[in-house]
Amino acid sequence: MKKLTMIALLALLALAALGASAQDEQGPAEQTEPVPMDPKDIVEGRGEREMVLIHGLGGNADIWDDCLPYLKGTFKVWTFEMAGHGRTQPITDPTINKEAERLAAYLEEEGIAYPTLVGHALGGMVALRYTIDHPADVSRLILLDAAPKQLASEEQKAAVGQELANDYDRYVYSRFVNMTPNEEVTERIVDMALRTDSATFISLLMSSFDFDVSDQLYSLPVPFLVVGSELMFPSKDDSQHMLEHYGFGKARSLSFKRMGGTGHYMMLERPIYTASVLLAFGVTAEYQFDR
Image 1 (spheres, one colour):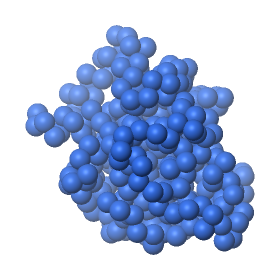
Image 2 (cartoon, helix red, strand yellow; image 1 turned 30 degrees about the horizontal axis):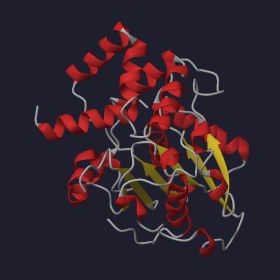
Image 3 (tube, rainbow, N blue to C red; image 1 turned 135 degrees about the horizontal axis):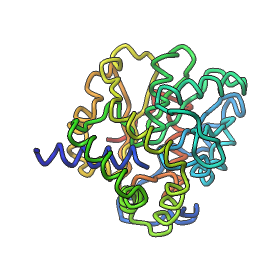
Image 4 (tube, rainbow, N blue to C red; image 1 turned 90 degrees about the horizontal axis):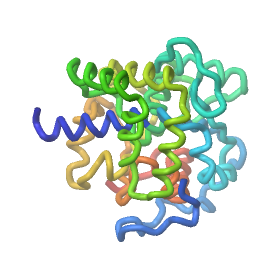
């Protein structure tokens, strides 16, 4: 296997198989870049816009808590929690498609119309699936460390299934322990993952291996932003190539923001900066991000 393919596979497996406080905003020099837009400058239409935040596999709705104070001044914000995660009961045979259907029911039940959808990792797959199925009902789409397709071969899928069968807890721990350099965040996300319903975790992870909507991106009319951590986009200069490698090459157009100096859980590591990116694109889809 080529080195690039192995790196991409490990990244996406880790991203599919998925706290620091808001004051922990210090880090490498690359983290000191200014926020894309000052939230005070984009509060026009306060309370009229709607945003739905979707966590990734092994997480729960609480991962957004540190971002919420910075979003609620401009948006009405909801957090959608996948079945079998956090305080939400499991369902039978959960898949990405079923979670997209649950998301549709949730939006209807809450009366949420034309929202900006924000999906992290596997939650981004759910948001993308829903958006493709309901393009007229989504204002903007923001994907955090998420891709439109998986890259695992049949042999690699079988190997993961065997690891899960042999020692589930060890597999889950190994997937989450290297997601971030922040020890407090690592402790929190490992605990969340191990508390996730195991049958749900396995079913959703396996369903992600068959996920591929890359051919449908060209016809997607909804403005969308891809936000990539340094974990998923190790080299700033190679970002365009990696976007194509992850399956975004057929998109008609997209915006891209690389968050240097961050692990996979950017909303826990740098909540203020993450919120500012969501605000900038959520309010003005034409905002130009630096690549």
